[in-house]
Length: 280
Ligand code: HBI
Ligand code: FE
Image 1 (cartoon, rainbow, N blue to C red):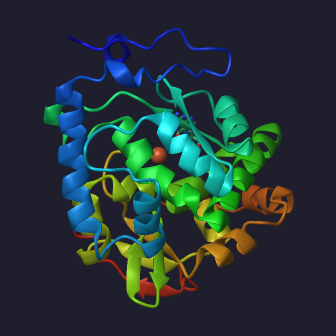
Image 2 (tube, rainbow, N blue to C red):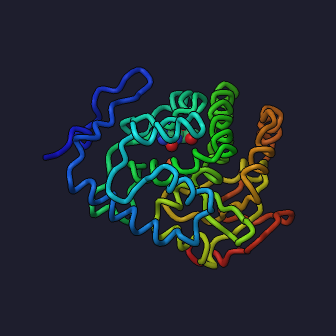
């Protein structure tokens, strides 16, 4: 039986939300979740930032199957006021930012097919819920994501969304953090990918450069392959502090600056590891 969500989205509402229909998931779909969860939970034990692992435990994103957003939201709501809402797929930027600004994380609710275990082009519920949701239990990261939503609405009005999309990409999706116990992963795009969970920390190919807001906003990114450069923060507190100011003057400065291709290294970069660039 093909559940309704894979047969194309239920009729979304004005804010693009739909019902998760948790009861409609098949045993096979729960099985795919379990296989992905078991693999990543084992791989990430000493690769993911501790705040992520705390979130997986606190939210009880258990291994037994696809989480029910109603249960998730009871725990998440009590912790930071965030909720997960189901959407059919990528939603328009303004809708996406309106949700984030209201502490609602738009998550897909279909799960990939078995032949897509290694990679799928668009986010599925494993990427969204396993990759993104656990960190929303961390108060500082929860604040950062709400601020990102507000920043997105403002960037849209300033015609500067592409700069902010780079900030999201190099932090929320593909960010690394250097804590007391070394380099760790916090980006959802890495956390939900077996290959990139290994590549981002172990492979000599990519650059690893200390986070700098303007530098990140100038740097293009690839959506179809592992990253050529990872930006590394020292703490969520520092990321939040450095991205708190109004970006309007920064956008004005950026308009005059050239975009940087993903693998570029600048003389004044604080380079942690200079990549061999072998992969690309
Ligand atoms: N929609 N559901 C969903 N998930 C996303 O991550 C998402 C989106 N729409 C727009 C978007 N991301 C990006 O274009 C913005 O972060 C710029
Ligand atoms: Fe994502």
